[in-house]
Each structure stands twice: as structure tokens, then as C-alpha cells.
Amino acid sequence: MYKNFFFHLRPRKVPARAVRFTLTWGLGGAATLMVVLQLLTGLLLNFAYEPFPVHSYLSVQHIQTELFLGRLIRNLHHWTGHFLLVVACLHLLRVFFSGAYVTPRRGTWYSGLVLLLLVLTANFTGYLLPWDQLAFWAITIASSMLAYIPVVGDLLQNLILGGTEVNGATLHIFHSFHTTLLPLAFLFFMSYHFWCIRKAGGVKVDGADRQNMLPVVPELLVRELAFAAVVSCFLLLFAMFFDAPLTGMANPSLTPETVKAPWYFLWLQELLLHMQPVLALCLLPLAFSIFLLLLPFLSQKREKPSLFVQVIFISFFLVIITLTITGVWFRGAGMKLLLPW
Ligand code: HEM
Ligand code: HEM
Image (cartoon, rainbow, N blue to C red):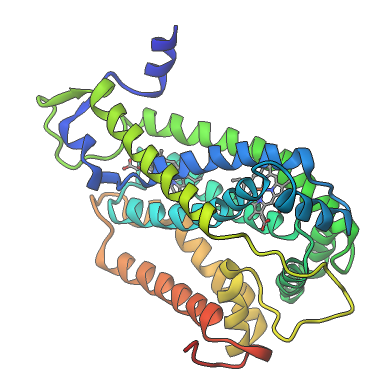
């Protein structure tokens, strides 16, 4: 029974080249492990967390200072959420450069894009939950950017915030979404992602020698378990030594000197400082999204992305990374440019 279930997910044998670490860099596996960790630590946090203004802040403080292992579990949930986003983006890069997005992997690519959106949404909705000044103002600035979207902007902002500003209703919406719909969506789309990978005959291995096959158990499984142990140790050590931030309680009438969006949306805030809002917050992100959606059709017959496609992709990524770094490290009070040293 166990064997049957396992072999529905995995084949019995894979080409010898498929077990090489440098084929996938373990990124899809690491992302899977991190989502599972988030579900487990999130479930635990939810026992002690109270989703109401003031109470939420106090409950996070309580988790942090008084509950057994509370600080470690909160730190783990906080940092793993952020690392997951980085790992999912690296996984997207690796998949892109392997050209693993064309038929028969189109479904895997699209479900991957949905998973990336879920990781972003989970981080964004989680960000508000501690209800401290950092969370309150970061979500305020990030959601205010929505209002620049022509026609539907105000409606969208109202829908997400449950009103025109961040308040108790927003906290309620974010918490419900974060702890019910999102975990379900993760389970569904991850299962679909894995099913697509299996249906496409496993991960893409260029010119694999089908004579030279290795059994999945133990060859691949042992390597996967060893890598999972390394990733878990790294996350645990990081959570032991670095505390998740918790500033003063949210105060809507006390605007801090510098208000920055969560780091993964800072590139948008940065773009807004340089160009016309509709171009910065609507047309450019839309163009990149359309590019990612059309990618499986742009280079259908090729093994690897064409030079033209690579140039567009790398340019977009470099712009996003440069703007994010500028926003995180080179902006001080009032979003003025400064050197971090
Ligand atoms: C991939 C899935 C998830 C991600 C990326 C994620 C991310 C986050 C982040 C970044 C925070 C803010 C942490 C902080 O600064 O304190 C947070 C808070 C929280 N999350 Fe999640 N989360 C996920 C899944 C879940 C699940 C499944 C639950 C519960 C069923 C959950 C419950 C909570 C609770 C109660 C908090 C508030 C406590 C706190 O802030 O320490 N999360 N989440
Ligand atoms: C929570 C996020 C994600 C999880 C848990 C996940 C999980 C996995 C796993 C376990 C694999 C097989 C091993 C590997 O290639 O590393 C894989 C492959 C794949 N993933 Fe993801 N993935 C995620 C996000 C994404 C994203 C953002 C994309 C791209 C848009 C994507 C597209 C793909 C594709 C196309 C493959 C097949 C690669 C091949 O055949 O060589 N995934 N994913």
C-alpha cells in the first residue's frame, strides 16, 4: 500500500543523470520542505494568536516571550516565509534556463506561477498579523499603491482592506485568508504541480541515457533526505540566532520617518519614485507577467530559451533585483538616497 502510493508520485527508476544535484540544485525540493514547515509552524502559532487589533500584538508578544519554544517557532515561521520566496524565484530561474517550460511541461510552469503568487500572498497577508508599527505602515504603503491602477484600483483596494484604510477589518480578512484559503490552495496547487511533473516523465534531463537507470529508492531518496536535513539545520540555526522583528504596537496616528513596503514589493515603490504611476505600477508589471505567461509559446521547438528571450528575461530580473537592493539598503528617512555605510 505504502509502496503503491509512493510510486504514484515517483517512478521506480530514473536516468543516472537525474540524481545529480546540479540538475535541479534541490530548489523544488527545498521549496516543498519550506511550505510544509510553514504549514506546521503556522498551525502551532495559530493556537496562541488572536486576530484583533491590540490583542494580536499582545498575543505575538506573549508567543515571543512566554510560550515554550514560542520565540523559536515564530522566528522559524518568519524567516522560512522570506527564504521560501527567494528559493521559489531561484527555482523559477533554474527552470527557465533549463527550458523546462515548453510542452509537455506547460502545466508545471503555469502551476509554478500560481505557487509563486501564493507564496507572495502568504508573505504579504502574514506581514500584517503581528500588528506592530512596521507591519501596519508597510501594508498601508503597499496597499495604497493599488489605488494607482486605473478603473479597478479603488475597488481592489476596498476589497483587500475591507475599507479605505488598514484597520481591524483588514486584519480579520488577512488572517482568514492566511490561515484557511491559502493553506488549502497550497495543498491543491502543489499536488497538481507534482502530478504534472510525473506526467511529463520527471524532471527534464537533456540527452539522458535510458540504458543507465538507477532505482529511486535508495539512490534519489537518500540524497533528497540528506539535502532536506541540511536545509532544516540551516533554517533552525538561523531562527535560533536571529529574532523576527517586533516594533511598537501599530499606531495609525503616528507615521514613522521612513515607510517602506515589504521588501518583495519595494521594487514597485522604487519604480514609483522614478516614473509615472500607471507606467510603474501597471504597465511594466503587466508586461513582465504577460511575458512569463506567454513564455511556453515563445520558444516552442527549442531545447533552451533563445537569446532574445534570455535577454528580455534577464533584463527584467536585473531591474527588479537592482531596485529591490536600492530600496532595502540605499533609502533612508523620507526615502532619500543614502549609503548604508
Ligand atoms: C507558505 C505558507 C505561509 C507563509 C509564507 C507564511 C508567512 C508568514 C509571515 C511572513 C508571517 C509574519 C511573521 C512575523 O513577522 O511575525 C506570518 C505570520 C503568521 N502566520 Fe503564516 N505563513 C504561511 C502559512 C501559515 C499557515 C498555514 C498558518 C496557520 C494555519 C499561519 C499562521 C500564521 C500566524 C498565526 C501568524 C501570526 C503570528 C506571528 O506573526 O508570529 N501561516 N506568516
Ligand atoms: C512553492 C513553490 C514551488 C514548489 C514547492 C515547487 C516544487 C517543485 C519540485 C519538487 C520540482 C521537481 C524538482 C526540481 O525541479 O527542483 C519542481 C519542478 C518544476 N517546477 Fe516547481 N515548485 C515551486 C514553484 C515553481 C515556480 C515559481 C515555477 C515557475 C514558474 C515552477 C516550475 C517548475 C517546472 C517547470 C518544473 C519542472 C522542471 C523540469 O522538468 O526540469 N515551480 N517544482
